[in-house]
Length: 554
Image 1 (tube, one colour):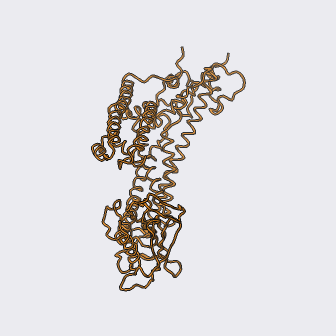
Image 2 (cartoon, helix red, strand yellow):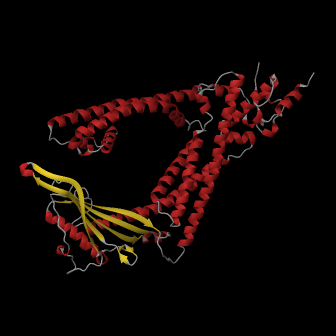
Image 3 (cartoon, helix red, strand yellow):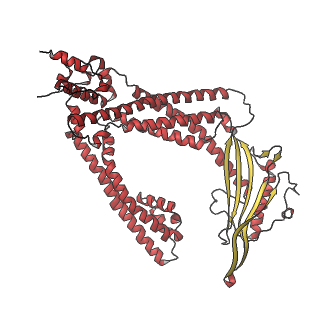
């Protein structure tokens, strides 16, 4: 008779990667051993980092890298945020300065109400901006200068846009108009001669036909250098400002709105020299960014490897279940092998690597994509901090939030889809009915923001009070509309939403005390009674009697 230990030893000598590639009919011993090895492999896969260290002595490299990455990415974001803050402040302050320089009588916070109402005021505003442009060197307290193309300075363009033909007689209720838009422009050179410090209107053949006038547009370009970054040991950037002053007469309502738009481009300065250690500090920051990229690359490789291992183990378990139990594994059990936390970390690593590369290019003055870099680094840092929740989930007292969110998510999504139908209905109705009579309902975006604020109890009285009473029917409809929306969403929809979360919370809390219902996968793994520190998980120590301890069979 054959020795049983020899048989088991020969079974255990098979390679794990070829468990199901054997030929012929496997013996009972082989089936038990294969099942035992798979069960132990699954149990090890779902262990936390500490248990894996006890089981095989593997150091938790992913955990260590994530902790290091949190600190490094946060420090990187803070430094970039401080630098970006100076850029934003410089842009905003220049825009405010330009409004005070080129808009006559402008005061702060009057952008929505800044307008003219007489023909004389329109001409005064236009030639005031032209004169300020010509005297820029003498009046500006900033380091502003005209843009140059070669040796010549670029001119200001003054263009008027008007209907091709128009005869309008409101008194007779008649009009004859050709809506084709025509353009007429003239240009003001920065070296234009001035008389007594001002440019007279007679210097140009410029006349406006206000009955046909649509818009007047003044466009010119200026340049500046942001020197405040020198104090923070950063190289200054060179800025190109494309300024557009628009006189909007599209409505022909007797009110011409005036606005100044500042389109900003950041470029690398051509020639520069700064005494001190700025260049050295820039090199130190680039080295730090390179180290962040290396750390995230290591995290990306480790997490990607773990995801691939999970998918391979999933396939192995599915094949085993079909072969031995003649049934398919449920979708929920298959998804247990796909670790969503690892996928989130992979996404954050990719975003951090791209964002850090852009940041290095910005510091080297090769790129100026501050907004794109901010989005990438901000999103990646948010995901990195969210990833910490995974490691808190290994402790039962901290795991309640994660379990509640995961259990409630499907019902929450279904509930939100139903509530969104009601919400969109109110949005469209409010926009079309109340839009002409209420400033908060002028566009769909504003309607959505207003209704969302009402759901959260914000600015309720102002929303009711600002409703115009020009039409009693619309005013009455607005009261029914607002009262019904607030009552429906605050007292019913939100209450049901909170009840949905609360019910899931109570269920999870009960499961934590009484035990979670086991799935087929967890029941299969639970039959393995080997503890992490039993030594039976070490690959090199697979003994012939392994399955006798792990597989408790009657």
